[in-house]
Amino acid sequence: MQAIDELPDNIARVDAFLWLARWVDASSVQAALVRLLEREDDATSLAEMIDGLESLAAIPPTLAQPIWDALRPRFEARSEHSWMRCHALRGGLLVVQNSPSLIRRLQAYILDVDAQDDGAYLRHVAKVAGVILRRYPDDDFRAVLHTLAGVEASADEAALELGLDQLRQSLVAQTQTGVSLALASAREWFERSLTSSENRPDARLYEICASVLIATQATGLDGALDRRLPELRRWAFEFSAYAAASHCATSWLSGIPQERFHWLSMASKLATLGRSFTKDIWLHANLVIEEELLAIFFVGERIFGRSDASGMNLLARNAIVTALRRRSFYVEAIDQWLVENGDSTLAPSVRQVRDAVRQTVVDGIHRHPFDEAAEVRIADLLRKSGVDAATAAMTAAQIEVAVDRNQPVAPVWQRMMDDLSECADIDRCPAKALLETMCTLMLRFLEFRASVGTATDPSSEYVFRRGSNLPVEHDLHLDFLKFLSSTDTPSIQAEARDTGGGRSDIAIAFRGLKTIVEVKKDDNVPDNKTLAQRYAGQATGYLTTGVRFGFLLVLDLTDRAGHQPHISEQISVERKKPTGSDVEYHVITARIQGKRKTPHQLR
Image (cartoon, rainbow, N blue to C red; front, top):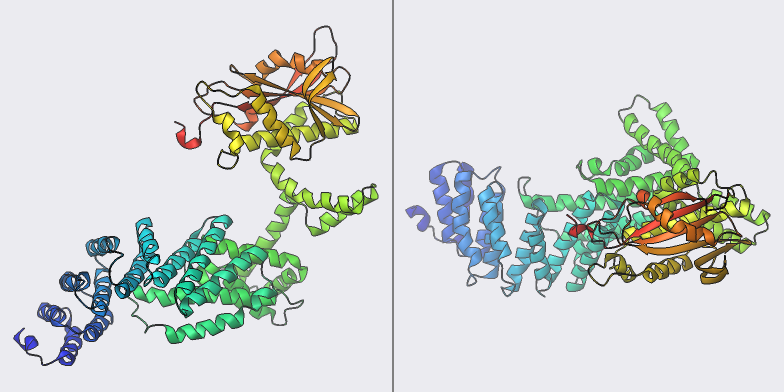
C-alpha cells in the first residue's frame, strides 16, 4: 500500500491499476485496486480505471463489494465534480451486475435521487436508470425517468430512455392494440427527446424506426416504406460517429448498441421487404424469401433473438400475410421455392409462412367472407335489384363491419331464429326481414348496455343506480329509442296512438308491416318466462291487425348483488295465446339488468 501511496501522479496510478487488474483474483491485488480507486481525484483517470474494470471477463464477488463501498461516496457527494460522480456511478453500475444485494442498493439510490441535483449528473442518472429498467422493468423507475424528463438538463436523456422502454413493451405486447399504443408512445418520447436537445442522432434514428413500425401496422408493406431507407441509413451513419465506444459483452451497457442494431435491422428489413412487395415479379425470389421474408416473419428469433417477442411477431406476420394475399404470384413463388428447395433447412420455415397465408384464406371464408372483390359483387347485385349506385356502394361497404359487429352475438341470434321457426309470419319476405332485423338490433342493444360503462356513455348510469333513487321505466324507454335512432332500424314511432285501441310504447313499421316494442319495469324477475306471463298479454293486444310477433323489453330491478346475467339468459322467444283466441304469438322477451355494480366492485 505504501508503494501505491507514493506513486507520483494520476498517470502512474492509472498504469498501476491496469497492470494489477491482470491478477484481479488475488486478494492482495484486490486491496491495491480498491486503494487506487479511493485515492484517485482526477475524473479522467477514474474513467480509465473503470474502463479497465469493464474489460475484465468478470469482477470477483470479493472485489465487487469493496469497489462499491469506495465508489458510492464519490457519486453520492454533491461536492464532487459532476464528471467524477458520473464515472463513479458507471463503476457502481458495473460492479453490482452479479450481486442482487448491491443491485437493490443501487436501485434504492436511483429512486431517491433529487431532481434538484446537478444537471450534468442527472443526465447520467437517467442513462443508468434506463439501463437498469431494461433489466428490471419497474413502474417506480419509470416514475423517476418521468421526473427527470421534466428537468431541462436531463430531459432529452430521460425521454430517450422512456421511448426505449416503450419500444421494449411493444416487443412483448400480446395484442395488436398493445403494440400500437406502445409504438405511438415510444415515438412521442423520441420526439420529445429531439425537442429537448439540439440534435440527437440516436433519438432521430429510433423515432424513424418507430415510425416505420407504425406505418407497417397501419398500412402494411408498401412502397412508402422504401422511401424511409435513405433516411434510416443517414441517421444510422451519423449515430455511429456519435455513439460511445463499445462495451465488453459482460457489461449491461453492451446491450445498448445491440438493442439499437435490432430495431434498425427490423425497420430496414421492413422497408426493403415493402419494396419487394411492390414488384409484380421477384427477379431474385430466393433472396427475397430467404433473406427478407423469413427474417421478418420470424422477427422475434432471427432479429431480436427472443422467443417472447410476441408483439413484433404479431405486427410482422400480419403485415406479411396481408401483403402475400394481395397477389397470387407471391404465394406461387413460395410454392415454387418449396418445390426446388424441399431439402433445405429453411424449408420448414418457408412452409410455415405459406401455411399461415392459406389459413387466413380459410378463416376469411368462415369469418370474414367479404373482401374488396366480394364488396363489388354485392354492390352490383344491389344495382341489378333496382338500388341506385350510391346507395348500393354504401350498403355493400357496411357489410364487413356488420360481420364483425354481429359475430359475438350470432350464436344467441341463431338460437332465437330456431325458436322462431314456427312463427306464422316467418315465411313472408318482408315480415322475415323485419323480424330478423329487430332481433339483431335487440341483441346489439343488450350487448351494448352490458358492456359500456358510464365513462364512455354517461347515460348508462341508470343501470348502476342503487339505493332509494332507482331508475324508472322511462329511463329504459328513452335509452332504447336513442339506440334505435342511431342504427339501421326500420321506421319507429314512440308512444304510438291507435294501436290495438291503445298506445304502444314503440311502434315499428317496415314495408306496410307493423310490430311493437313494449317497455316495462319489474323488481322481481326470476326468468323471462315469468315476464312473458305477466306482460305478453298487453304486448299481443297491440298486434291484432299486424304480424304475429312482438317485443317485450324489461328493466330488471331484481337485486342480484350487482351482477348481471349472461346475454344468453337475458333474451328468449316466448309464446302467448290470448284467452279466447287460437292465434299463437311469438314474443321476443329481453331484459336489461339494473342495480348493477362495476366488475371491480363485485364479490
